[in-house]
Length: 612
Image 1 (cartoon, helix red, strand yellow):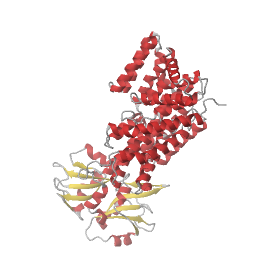
Image 2 (cartoon, helix red, strand yellow):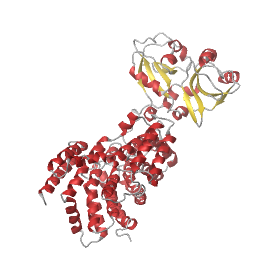
Image 3 (spheres, helix red, strand yellow):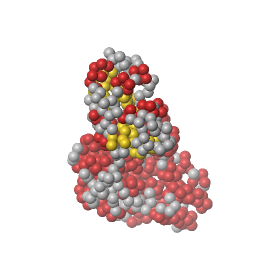
Image 4 (cartoon, helix red, strand yellow):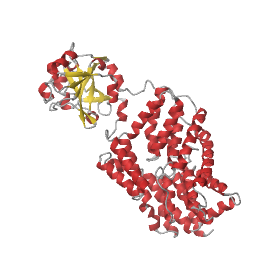
């Protein structure tokens, strides 16, 4: 061992120790090593900084942006809602569908992001079905990790290994090169988890009934809105067509308050907030609140040529992306005190409609718009979420008391799911066809998402996980340094000597095991950076195809099931699943061994060691 290699290995050992202690954080370790390595004289500063110009780093950043676009537009949320409907009451079907959906979505976006999206979905499913969250969180994390074995862009280690192939003058993997391995492993994971979940504690978290956030349906019942809210369609014969709400003044003439207006625009329906200057059109659907006592909505519909439409309490939940509610309290020094709701001009001042009023604990059933407001009165407001959000910044008139649980599920960019899917399909199509490089395909998809307003620049920058990018860039110089000092050849020779005479399968199994075990202490991305050159060196010594050896490293890097610190994915589900360290060991170790067996058998079969 030469002195230069000893220094590089010493720095690598120091990096691994800092990773294991998590002090300092991983991206800081990457920056430290990136700065120190040029002092050894093994690599230049330009070589140390080369990672910043690596196309795969740019590609990874672009994939974070695309994943955020899918979240903001509701593609991921709709998948979750479909999951609940399709699974029904079958726990087996639920787990199988959950893992399939998560692995499929994770094949095109960050697995960490997918888990973050599906944790609340899984918790909601657990609450509605009575299942323990622990029965869903482990399948969720396993599926997210397996998603890294589905496509080239599914996880950073795949891109690192692919980059190493290209750097050695080889053609990289295609977009779906990983799929023939990922699909069987996903099936194995589903079958295994259906059995292994019995090893997890089946007790739910303590009942959070008293601390459960109020929902829109709770307020519909509490304020008795079901008896007062109606949906009516404006017919072409209606005298309201072409007139503004200020001109017809339904509140004064009929005791009816317009809460929202549904208007067809092409293939979508817009929900408009009522304004005095809003002109009604034929076929508009009005959500109205009948506040006047003894008001007969049926007679009013006949007089105004309106068609009654069905309405249930679930309407507010179904429309929760467009229509929000909030409970507010009249402040002590508010100028609203002593005025009625109509006199206060809520729609003009706050662009919100009052649909409920409570003096103390008693909610008024009717006549709330003409009731004089007092200090401490609680009002239920309805309107666009944007206007509700403004209440938080000004507490002089109204104090925001409560927001419904649905508020956390409101999409930043509703109505753009189709456009986001088109952008994703464009990217995949360009990558599969090979018309342009993968990084260019991803950047085109990002620009399309921006042009179609699926995401804005601020959100795009926030979505990029800069820590992960800096970590990869900081560890890439080790690959160059180890190759220059002979460390890669030394590791390859050592592994070959250890498995001498044992055959190809033993060599692949050893490479898989070392990669997976190394991933227990450092990130799977850093593991791929270190092990990919070793795998290609072994292939070179054997005069064999580099692809099976590169693939085995990539698949092993995603086999991070064994501890909660093996991957951020595992760390995310540990709290919601109420897991202990031993739960991951008990479930993850057998699964890792089975995945290794499957990979060692499949890889040389689908990617021959010595192709003819």
